[in-house]
Image 1 (cartoon, rainbow, N blue to C red):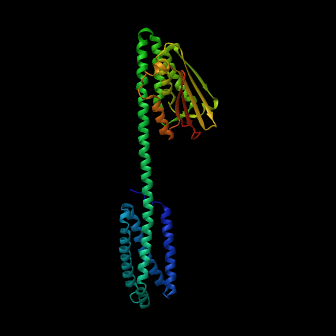
Image 2 (tube, rainbow, N blue to C red):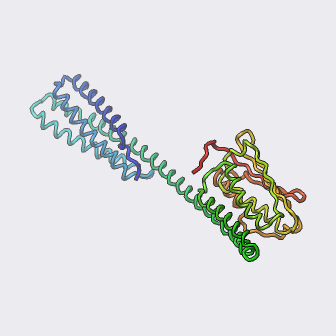
Image 3 (cartoon, one colour):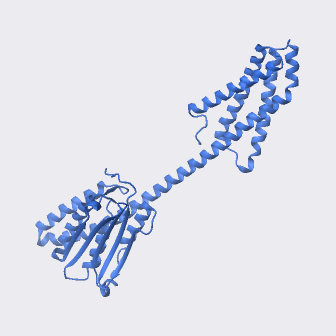
Length: 353
């Protein structure tokens, strides 16, 4: 149900003020026709009280029934009917009160049409104002519901992307722990602890949360420690984080899938050492620019097929959060694969929870 126009003190203040002014005008007009002050006040009070009541009736009913464009003529019919009822009741009451005042009764008879037209205009104007108010409010509330529905859908999609990440990484880690358990139980125990810390940090963070790059790198380091247990000395990493960039905001857990993608294409088809480089800089204090580089073999990487998650999910997530499709791109140059990520700094308030 649309929010009522009568909700709040401002409406009643404006409504009452208007009728007080109109009543004063009503009394002044009657006084010009040499009607006694008592009669003028009584006429003005009764007539305008009834007219105001019918106007309120229209306003409140419009809240529950709002005619559509093809039925706007309903407003005309309602205004005509209510104006007739107003005129009938006011004349009935006033004729009863002033039944012995011939001068007043004569004026009451002569003013029949002007009273009817005035009542029709008042009720009609109030109907149009109510129609405009409720139509705009309905549009606003529909837009709000649409935005909320889109937000829920966006949250659901982000959650789905997040949930896709966990099993993919978890299976690889558990396989490594299983392989280590028999030959190197101490290392397996250490890896379980690291995996526990990583997953605990992952579960605590909300999908929309923005964290500083420094915090994101700290969490990424837990992931890299786990992967270094799997790959040993073959996995080497270099982090070059600009001091200003470290304080900038980034969607939580954004880098881990990108680095995982770099490890997959850099290490899976080689037995040599692989260096993964992560560089973060700023641009005009408005953009956080991140570059992730890993070597790759063009001959073997062509045959490597991922899960379809990887970079596509990051691009989708960035689009959902920033409504831009140019925030991630990749580049292949000789035997170096580069992933460029841009994070707009919409505000500088941290959203830590």
